[in-house]
Image (cartoon, helix red, strand yellow):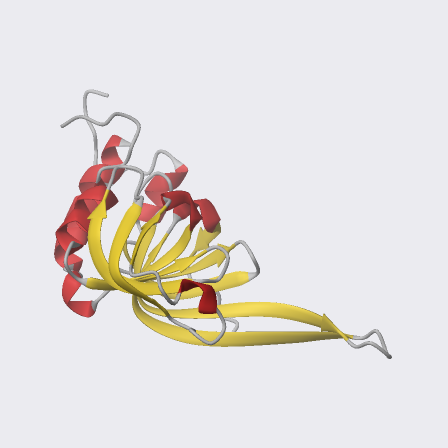
Length: 97
Length: 100
């Protein structure tokens, strides 16, 4: 490790480093998703996001028809610390919404 | 102060936030607002002057004013806008991410 080039992408965490100060998409456990600006992270994937939208998805089953009703609830938070043990994946934002 | 194996970035960040009001959301969906009293390397949190966010839904915490929260049960911490210096966070992250 004689020369540590800050801009070299060697391992997966380096890919996340490229997204610093950019908007990202985070998939969390419990069917939650976040979209926000990445301000800080560490090797545990603890993160601080800014201007965050959280989407919680739940599926209800109708008692009679047994059809699946997919519901989502959204909320907006200005600055959010996210604990890394809930993170499943991190990515540039998907162009779905 | 060497704490090998534990990220220092967020520990240092939360130490700077002591005295400010935060809202801690736990993995069991309970959300607690309070003044950040202290934090440790495991990101365990001590809050003072606590009140539960949805008091009608969680009445069993009505008499609790101070609490210790194990770091591992935290899902989110909502941060006050004046507690976030984006530039300092970016610089610290670049330095910490290199060492990982």
